[in-house]
Image (cartoon, rainbow, N blue to C red; front, side):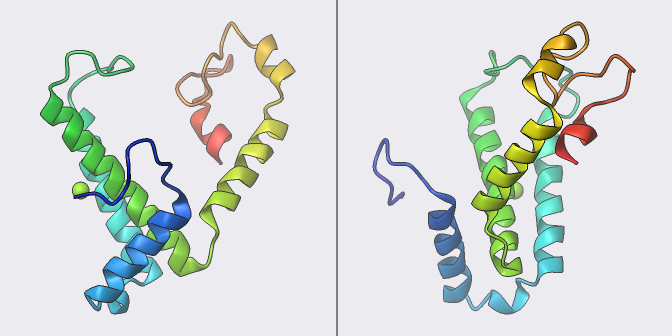
Length: 142
Ligand SMILES: [Mg+2]
C-alpha cells in the first residue's frame, strides 16, 4: 500500500509532489483553491479534535488507547498535514523553510535564559500558562 521503505524519511517535498499528483490524476486542481483548501484543513482539524473530545487530559504516549484509536488518530493527523502541505504549495509558500524560519523567530522571542527564569510558571510553551496567568500558546505560535 505504501511506496516508502521502512526507516525512509518522508519529506515535505515528497508529500507535496504526492498531493499534486493525486489532485492532477483526478482533475481536482480546479477545486484546490486556497480558500477551499483552508476550509478543508479546518474541517480536518475538527475531525482530529473529535478524537480527543470528552477524554479529559490525555497522557503522553496515549497509554490505554486501543490500536484502532491510534490508527484513526494517525489518519486524522495525516489529513491535517496533507491539506496544510497542499495549501502551502498552492499558495507558493515553501512550508519547510517557513517553518524553520518561524522556529528561529520563536527562539529569538523566547530565549533560553528567559525560559529558565520562569521555571515556576512555564515548562512547555504549548501547554502552560505564564506567571501572568495568560495562555502562552498564542504568544508562542503567533
Ligand atoms: Mg479526516
